[in-house]
Image (tube, one colour):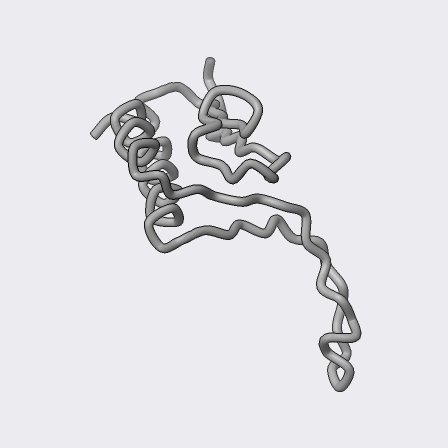
Length: 97
């Protein structure tokens, strides 16, 4: 499948991703010496996470350039839950283009 075909196939599934900034609350780990790090939290059904995996693998093959993005307020919005504000921007390094 091409990236376009992966996007189209999964857009028709109705399964959506949610991306958000996430910093664990130290109160959730009272007995641990926890270093509080920031994360990109990606949530979705197993099917929507499979979509993300397929997209990453196909993009990593490098046949579609060295940069690619989808965003909930732009191209690729069908893949995100409505409350999502963060998109996905992928870059292969080094980029020769």
